[in-house]
Amino acid sequence: MVRDEATPVAVQAPAPALLQVDGVSLEYVAQDRIVRATHRVSFEVQRGDRFVLLGPSGCGKSSLLKAIGGFIAPTEGEIRLAGAAVREPGPDRIAVFQEFDQLPPWKTVLANVMFPLQAARRLPRAEASEQAMQALVRVGLADFAKAYPHTLSGGMKQRVAIARALAMQPTVLLMDEPFAALDALTRRRMQEELLTLWADAPFTLIFVTHSIEEALVVGNRILLLSPHPGRVRAELDAQRFGLHSAGSADFQAQARRIHRLLFEEDRPA
Ligand SMILES: Nc1ncnc2c1ncn2[C@@H]1O[C@H](COP(=O)(O)OP(=O)(O)O)[C@@H](O)[C@H]1O
Ligand SMILES: [Mg+2]
Image (cartoon, rainbow, N blue to C red; front, side, top):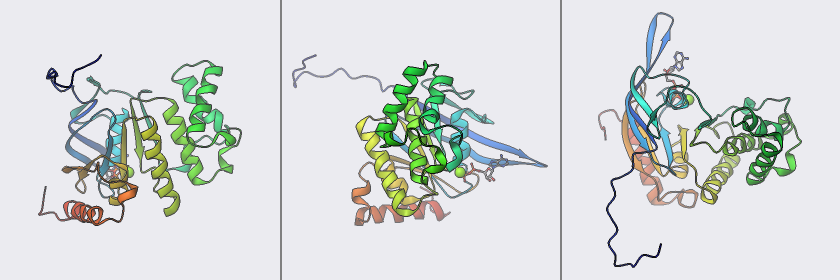
């Protein structure tokens, strides 16, 4: 459609967010007591967001991802994806974890990436193989398609896990501290590669970390969660930060501000 610049554009009602987390409390029953992991957490993720959940260990970040994944049910509130309540796991939500052993060791790299395409997406073998290869090319591991996971470095294993997740073309990609067990340089490179993958073909990402710097680099929006049980403390715009700005005065000032918001109880947002 050709549109004259002077022609007014019809004002549209904002579309509902892709993912809505609405007043979600999560609890575990542990022996004789109930552990509350999150308390009435609400946030919305838009299509194409790189949405970061940031908070100290034990504040319920992983629990929130598990609930979005459909593996645990809220005791209060609701999670909706594209308007429909999340009730069970599905191939529209795929997770990448910190652990290096998330790849079955008896399958080659290619077979690891193919497996969910055949099992959950029900693609025929040839098509699954082709899509898996494309995903491996994207993460720079085409030459390792026939290798077994134990022959790969930690960073390479995480690339395979990312390729496997992206090949599934999930509605939201969930990442739970995916780079936390990597050495500092590899971690930085993986952050850069993730941002490049996103820039090449944007996807919707929910990324969990307890690193303030990683949150600022990876996210366009950051949700700050208070210590146990996790409550929303603030939501921040991090669009202007990236690897290029790490170390700048603005970046450092924002990192200090987040630190205050997270750890100074009597200064809520
Ligand atoms: N399976 C479980 N059973 C009992 N308590 C749990 C379980 N999983 C997590 N918790 C508790 O819930 C809280 C939040 O945990 P988690 O979501 O793993 O936090 P985070 O990922 O932010 O470190 C913690 O207090 C943790 O001990
Ligand atoms: Mg966790």
